[in-house]
Image (cartoon, rainbow over all chains, first blue to last red; front, side, top):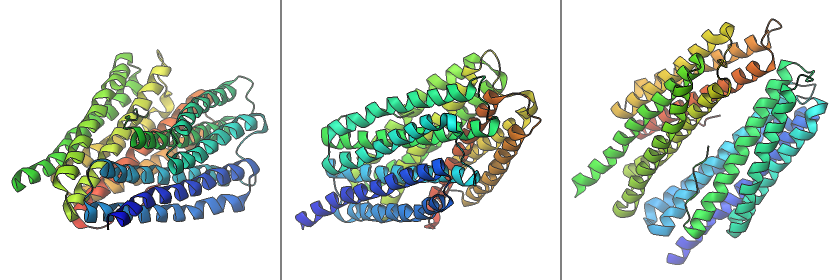
Length: 217
Length: 217
């Protein structure tokens, strides 16, 4: 009985790893839709979000079942509550990828990102996507070092976002207000995806080391 | 013993009401900072956010204590887990108010919002603030009707946000890229505050009626 319970507890983390991969795919596909203007890919990201929502429900149900039936305390309780929070953050990251896909869809048959700023946006998206990949490793391996790498990458996201702002506010910006707004909001979406990645990584560090994750802003 | 436990359970909702009032104040003060360009008010919102973070920690600790010591099941368990989620959303709303205050601070000694678009931004902020006020009532009174009002108000926020987009994308927009980006991001912040208000209201409806809150996007 005790064994089965431990398995269920670890099963939640396994489910979170699978869900993190789903989210990573949503982030990478939404970026492809954004940079190529591929309508099919954008639609796919938007419709696939239902799978992420269902994964959330499934994992939440498991957490509730464990809380109700096993009445865990101490570390186990901490793990389940962390699981509930992580699943909520992953769902939110999926929503943010949908927002990126919707910006792409709104500008079809064109792409939302002018050529001159495309490298910065591409780089920001790549860093965010890589952070999500690393989060999967952090959760799967309880890897505290990988968690620190996620945190370090967040600084690069901030730097890239500031750089894109400089580009759109430059007097030489020739693309007008609409693409500038798209870029500003896209920067915000990727930044939030990155923030959630950091938060997820910190939660795992907290589970492993008991060291409290800092507040996120 | 059982009585004390019930009191603690209700105490969490009472604490959430107080925290909701703190958040409401942050939203209204950040809007004042934004629309008047008052540096002192902006700084106050930013520094007062630490109180909201502390409220979060306190309420979380109480939830954990109840989960550990009382091992609640069924409705009580549902209420505590809802409390954990609500407290996270309230903290996030406080962060969003800080974002508004920081936009205000960035543009000092000017105001970030050009006069022509000020009424739309003011209205959007007022609706968001009113939604947060109503959430306090929803939680305090377990008021399902007030929760429906919060949900209805969210449609107005969406409408107002679309209207501000039309204004900044209008060929007659004479204020350039920077204020347009500020308005776009401010719209996003108020929209997210409103989304969280809806989510909080739905969680209370779920606690009261058992009817599941819909997913938020």
